[in-house]
Length: 368
Picture (tube, rainbow, N blue to C red):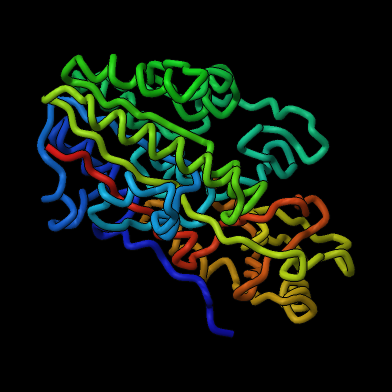
């Protein structure tokens, strides 16, 4: 069976290269190459950079009327990391490493040390029980924030204040100053106040687009409102940035909407099968032959893990990946999502695969 997935472009056109580009400019060194020459040339030099990440903002969304301010600032596209999931890509931002090296290879992740699948957004088991792990040491050290601090650059993140003490924030922001904001206006004002000081990387994170796309889909009023909020954040920040600062904007993945008839329930013949990953690419641990059988019985393609692992990025492979990896992936066929028993059937928007709507995210740059 032909593998329907594709790899991100790690050579200069991916989120990994965006992070490396900023680290190179601010410290003179990075773990990976920066952006391709044409994209790098579109970013002015600066003493302080603001990286605005709009969760769930795919490049295709810039065609929406509410995204006009974002579309105006677009200089190109980059690929999100695979799988195109939030915690996977946020870990790449936090470490400057691909999933192969930071080890957070899926948002629903099997952790052998707790013998359970773990939701890495909330750090809970499927039962809802909190997972007791050392969140602050989960990702490799030094992370991006620690490397910046060592080089004399102050890293600061601006994002919803409710996230400040969450397990995910403890995982992602070790060594990074956290500035909580509670409204769109507070996000804008905090970012601009912090940008006054040179020698900083300010990471401004807005989750609203992702939430709306998941719950109400891209044709909804709620999605238009979330996209308007993202465009407002971007436009007001770039209008008021001090002269020594430059803003860069992007997303961590896009979304595809699915109707009820596109959702493939997996309910039969699953004894002894462990599912994790996401509805677009279900990670499967099972006895030999079970994955192929499930694919033949559902609207999916079975891809062995050996064919998927290279898409996580170049090595050396994080030592924990072997224990966290599945036997293979059930890849939903085009136009479909797979819903194992624990998956949320209410969601309209999904992501995780490598179709352009999921993987292509915009690269935005503030004008000088």
